[in-house]
Image (cartoon, rainbow over all chains, first blue to last red; front, top):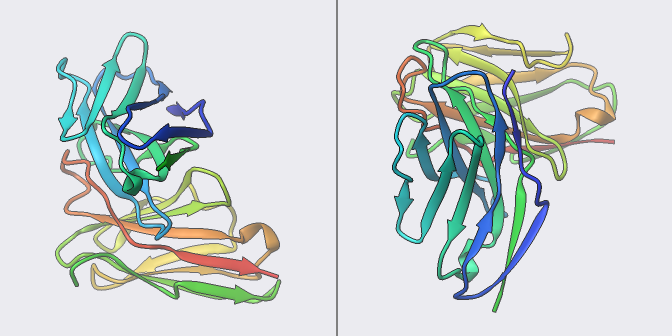
Length: 117
Length: 116
Protein backbone atom coordinates (compact mmCIF):
# COMPACT_ATOMS: atom_id res chain seq x y z
CA UNK A 1 0.00 0.00 0.00
CA UNK A 2 1.09 3.53 -0.65
CA UNK A 3 1.74 5.93 2.19
CA UNK A 4 2.35 9.65 2.19
CA UNK A 5 4.15 11.41 5.04
CA UNK A 6 4.32 15.11 5.82
CA UNK A 7 6.75 15.55 8.69
CA UNK A 8 6.01 19.22 9.38
CA UNK A 9 2.67 19.70 11.19
CA UNK A 10 3.14 23.49 11.12
CA UNK A 11 5.29 25.95 9.24
CA UNK A 12 5.58 29.70 9.44
CA UNK A 13 6.88 32.17 6.86
CA UNK A 14 7.22 35.91 6.66
CA UNK A 15 5.21 37.62 3.96
CA UNK A 16 7.22 37.91 0.70
CA UNK A 17 9.66 35.21 1.83
CA UNK A 18 10.05 31.67 0.52
CA UNK A 19 8.99 28.51 2.30
CA UNK A 20 9.37 24.81 1.47
CA UNK A 21 6.95 22.13 2.61
CA UNK A 22 8.21 18.56 2.75
CA UNK A 23 6.54 15.35 1.60
CA UNK A 24 7.81 11.82 1.29
CA UNK A 25 5.96 8.79 0.02
CA UNK A 26 6.36 5.08 -0.19
CA UNK A 27 5.40 3.03 -3.21
CA UNK A 28 6.60 0.07 -5.22
CA UNK A 29 5.13 1.47 -8.41
CA UNK A 30 7.12 3.36 -11.01
CA UNK A 31 4.33 5.31 -12.65
CA UNK A 32 2.15 7.59 -10.59
CA UNK A 33 1.04 11.17 -9.99
CA UNK A 34 1.78 13.46 -7.08
CA UNK A 35 -0.21 16.48 -6.03
CA UNK A 36 -0.25 19.35 -3.61
CA UNK A 37 -3.64 20.53 -2.43
CA UNK A 38 -4.43 23.64 -0.41
CA UNK A 39 -7.27 23.70 2.12
CA UNK A 40 -8.22 27.19 3.36
CA UNK A 41 -10.64 27.71 6.28
CA UNK A 42 -13.53 27.27 3.84
CA UNK A 43 -12.57 23.55 3.86
CA UNK A 44 -12.63 23.28 0.07
CA UNK A 45 -9.55 21.48 -1.25
CA UNK A 46 -7.91 23.33 -4.12
CA UNK A 47 -5.34 21.78 -6.44
CA UNK A 48 -2.08 23.73 -6.31
CA UNK A 49 0.24 21.70 -8.50
CA UNK A 50 0.60 18.27 -10.10
CA UNK A 51 3.64 16.18 -11.07
CA UNK A 52 3.73 13.11 -13.28
CA UNK A 53 6.35 10.63 -12.08
CA UNK A 54 7.62 9.89 -15.57
CA UNK A 55 8.50 13.53 -16.12
CA UNK A 56 11.91 14.55 -14.88
CA UNK A 57 11.19 18.26 -15.11
CA UNK A 58 9.82 19.75 -11.93
CA UNK A 59 6.34 21.25 -12.23
CA UNK A 60 5.86 25.00 -11.77
CA UNK A 61 2.71 27.07 -11.37
CA UNK A 62 3.45 30.78 -10.92
CA UNK A 63 4.83 31.17 -7.36
CA UNK A 64 4.54 27.45 -6.65
CA UNK A 65 7.13 24.88 -7.69
CA UNK A 66 8.08 21.39 -6.66
CA UNK A 67 11.31 19.53 -6.11
CA UNK A 68 10.58 15.99 -7.21
CA UNK A 69 13.26 13.46 -6.28
CA UNK A 70 11.97 10.12 -7.55
CA UNK A 71 14.76 7.94 -6.23
CA UNK A 72 14.43 9.48 -2.79
CA UNK A 73 10.60 9.41 -3.02
CA UNK A 74 10.49 13.04 -2.04
CA UNK A 75 8.12 15.72 -3.31
CA UNK A 76 8.53 19.12 -1.69
CA UNK A 77 6.55 22.28 -2.43
CA UNK A 78 8.24 25.66 -2.62
CA UNK A 79 6.16 28.80 -2.28
CA UNK A 80 7.96 31.95 -3.36
CA UNK A 81 6.99 35.51 -2.45
CA UNK A 82 4.55 34.21 0.18
CA UNK A 83 1.27 36.08 0.48
CA UNK A 84 -1.24 36.28 3.33
CA UNK A 85 -3.69 34.34 1.18
CA UNK A 86 -1.31 31.39 1.12
CA UNK A 87 -2.09 30.65 4.77
CA UNK A 88 -3.87 27.29 4.79
CA UNK A 89 -3.44 23.57 5.31
CA UNK A 90 -1.40 21.96 2.56
CA UNK A 91 -1.78 18.31 1.71
CA UNK A 92 0.51 16.15 -0.37
CA UNK A 93 -1.24 13.36 -2.26
CA UNK A 94 -0.36 10.30 -4.34
CA UNK A 95 -2.30 8.59 -7.10
CA UNK A 96 -1.39 5.43 -8.91
CA UNK A 97 -1.43 5.57 -12.69
CA UNK A 98 -3.61 2.59 -13.47
CA UNK A 99 -6.26 2.74 -16.13
CA UNK A 100 -9.72 2.25 -14.70
CA UNK A 101 -8.45 2.32 -11.13
CA UNK A 102 -10.25 5.51 -10.36
CA UNK A 103 -8.61 8.72 -9.32
CA UNK A 104 -8.44 7.90 -5.62
CA UNK A 105 -5.82 9.90 -3.83
CA UNK A 106 -3.80 8.90 -0.81
CA UNK A 107 -3.16 11.97 1.34
CA UNK A 108 -0.52 12.93 3.83
CA UNK A 109 -1.44 14.31 7.23
CA UNK A 110 -1.09 17.92 6.15
CA UNK A 111 1.06 20.94 7.04
CA UNK A 112 -0.47 24.09 8.43
CA UNK A 113 1.20 27.14 6.88
CA UNK A 114 1.02 30.45 8.69
CA UNK A 115 2.06 33.66 6.93
CA UNK A 116 3.20 36.55 9.10
CA UNK A 117 2.62 40.10 7.84
CA UNK B 1 -23.86 23.49 -10.91
CA UNK B 2 -20.55 25.27 -11.16
CA UNK B 3 -18.89 23.26 -8.42
CA UNK B 4 -19.36 20.30 -6.09
CA UNK B 5 -22.16 21.04 -3.68
CA UNK B 6 -22.55 19.35 -0.30
CA UNK B 7 -25.31 19.53 2.27
CA UNK B 8 -25.75 20.08 5.08
CA UNK B 9 -22.76 22.27 5.73
CA UNK B 10 -22.94 21.47 9.41
CA UNK B 11 -24.86 18.76 11.24
CA UNK B 12 -25.11 18.17 14.96
CA UNK B 13 -26.74 14.94 16.03
CA UNK B 14 -27.13 12.77 19.07
CA UNK B 15 -25.32 9.50 19.47
CA UNK B 16 -27.36 6.65 18.02
CA UNK B 17 -29.20 8.72 15.43
CA UNK B 18 -28.90 8.17 11.67
CA UNK B 19 -27.58 10.92 9.39
CA UNK B 20 -27.56 11.46 5.64
CA UNK B 21 -25.00 13.61 3.88
CA UNK B 22 -25.58 14.69 0.31
CA UNK B 23 -23.19 15.42 -2.53
CA UNK B 24 -24.07 16.97 -5.88
CA UNK B 25 -21.06 16.65 -8.21
CA UNK B 26 -20.06 18.85 -11.10
CA UNK B 27 -22.37 18.25 -14.03
CA UNK B 28 -20.92 15.67 -16.40
CA UNK B 29 -18.46 14.21 -13.91
CA UNK B 30 -18.86 10.44 -13.86
CA UNK B 31 -16.58 9.71 -10.91
CA UNK B 32 -17.45 10.63 -7.33
CA UNK B 33 -15.49 10.15 -4.11
CA UNK B 34 -16.15 10.41 -0.40
CA UNK B 35 -13.39 11.21 2.07
CA UNK B 36 -13.42 11.71 5.82
CA UNK B 37 -11.25 14.28 7.57
CA UNK B 38 -11.04 13.96 11.33
CA UNK B 39 -9.98 16.98 13.37
CA UNK B 40 -6.43 18.01 12.45
CA UNK B 41 -5.93 14.92 10.32
CA UNK B 42 -5.44 14.13 6.67
CA UNK B 43 -8.11 12.76 4.39
CA UNK B 44 -9.23 9.17 4.70
CA UNK B 45 -10.73 7.55 1.58
CA UNK B 46 -14.17 6.07 2.09
CA UNK B 47 -15.73 5.09 -1.24
CA UNK B 48 -15.51 5.73 -4.97
CA UNK B 49 -18.32 5.67 -7.55
CA UNK B 50 -17.94 5.32 -11.29
CA UNK B 51 -21.40 6.14 -12.59
CA UNK B 52 -23.82 4.48 -10.19
CA UNK B 53 -21.59 1.59 -9.24
CA UNK B 54 -19.00 1.55 -6.47
CA UNK B 55 -15.90 -0.39 -7.60
CA UNK B 56 -14.12 0.43 -4.37
CA UNK B 57 -15.84 0.46 -0.98
CA UNK B 58 -12.72 -0.53 0.86
CA UNK B 59 -12.54 2.61 2.95
CA UNK B 60 -15.93 2.38 4.63
CA UNK B 61 -15.02 2.00 8.32
CA UNK B 62 -17.92 -0.20 9.38
CA UNK B 63 -21.26 -1.62 8.25
CA UNK B 64 -22.93 1.45 9.78
CA UNK B 65 -21.65 3.39 6.78
CA UNK B 66 -23.27 3.10 3.37
CA UNK B 67 -23.44 5.18 0.24
CA UNK B 68 -25.41 5.23 -2.93
CA UNK B 69 -25.47 7.19 -6.13
CA UNK B 70 -28.47 7.50 -8.39
CA UNK B 71 -28.77 8.73 -11.95
CA UNK B 72 -25.02 9.03 -12.15
CA UNK B 73 -25.26 12.28 -10.25
CA UNK B 74 -26.20 12.91 -6.62
CA UNK B 75 -24.73 10.70 -3.94
CA UNK B 76 -25.83 10.14 -0.37
CA UNK B 77 -23.59 8.93 2.44
CA UNK B 78 -25.58 7.43 5.29
CA UNK B 79 -24.26 6.78 8.77
CA UNK B 80 -26.49 4.66 10.97
CA UNK B 81 -26.42 4.66 14.76
CA UNK B 82 -23.84 7.42 14.87
CA UNK B 83 -21.00 7.26 17.36
CA UNK B 84 -18.87 10.08 18.73
CA UNK B 85 -15.88 8.83 16.73
CA UNK B 86 -17.88 9.54 13.55
CA UNK B 87 -17.46 13.26 14.21
CA UNK B 88 -15.48 14.64 11.29
CA UNK B 89 -15.71 16.63 8.10
CA UNK B 90 -16.99 14.51 5.23
CA UNK B 91 -15.63 15.73 1.91
CA UNK B 92 -17.01 14.82 -1.47
CA UNK B 93 -15.09 15.17 -4.73
CA UNK B 94 -15.80 14.49 -8.36
CA UNK B 95 -13.68 14.02 -11.45
CA UNK B 96 -14.47 13.94 -15.13
CA UNK B 97 -13.78 10.27 -15.52
CA UNK B 98 -12.37 7.76 -13.08
CA UNK B 99 -10.78 5.86 -15.94
CA UNK B 100 -8.79 8.76 -17.28
CA UNK B 101 -5.43 9.86 -16.05
CA UNK B 102 -6.20 13.52 -15.56
CA UNK B 103 -5.99 13.00 -11.84
CA UNK B 104 -7.73 16.21 -10.84
CA UNK B 105 -10.42 15.93 -8.23
CA UNK B 106 -12.74 18.84 -7.55
CA UNK B 107 -13.84 19.04 -3.95
CA UNK B 108 -16.86 20.41 -2.19
CA UNK B 109 -16.69 22.35 1.05
CA UNK B 110 -17.60 19.36 3.12
CA UNK B 111 -20.19 18.50 5.73
CA UNK B 112 -19.05 18.89 9.31
CA UNK B 113 -20.69 16.21 11.46
CA UNK B 114 -20.69 16.52 15.24
CA UNK B 115 -22.03 13.61 17.27
CA UNK B 116 -22.86 14.52 20.86
